Length: 235
Image (tube, rainbow, N blue to C red):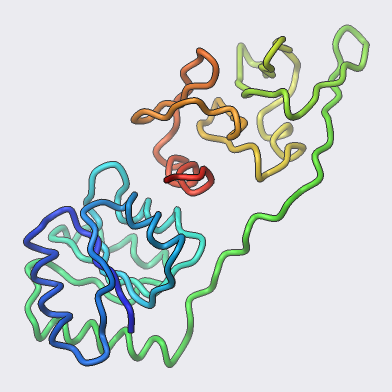
């Protein structure tokens, strides 16, 4: 069984790694002190199990799980037992291992993982399918105006209306983000905030919780940040 360890505490990684070396058939391929590097690793490697810390900078353990397109078995690790309640929302989470990790308790987690493999495999998320791109037509002064989808930088709510921002012109129309989003290709557009939809291909920079498109800074909500990081080609 191949596994990785993700934890921002070096001591916690060391303890888990030493426990793993005492189990026949359990191989630690790599350890990570942040979830972003682990996402890149999982793009190239298949594993069976992740020991995942919940409290981490940039991406929390749960945000990391939301960013995965394929979920292996997960054993959550943390000293904050109050965060374990949310674990019931994820079928791939097999156990909750509280810090500090005793070896007998660790063995118990491994046994649960082995039993879960025999009972049920985690469901895989379907990959994003390539879609046909159709241009949009909007009504401006009783005239139909064609907007090329590839020209759209982002779309935002503005004074109870919606503004479509392109690389050469902005259009203000009566509509809603939800109505427009269903007409856009999912592989290219993403709602990153309750007031913004962006064209992922137009991103210039990402810093903290903001995206730069052209010279405009666009906020990214905490709930949508993990999906954004999954969708871009993070290197």
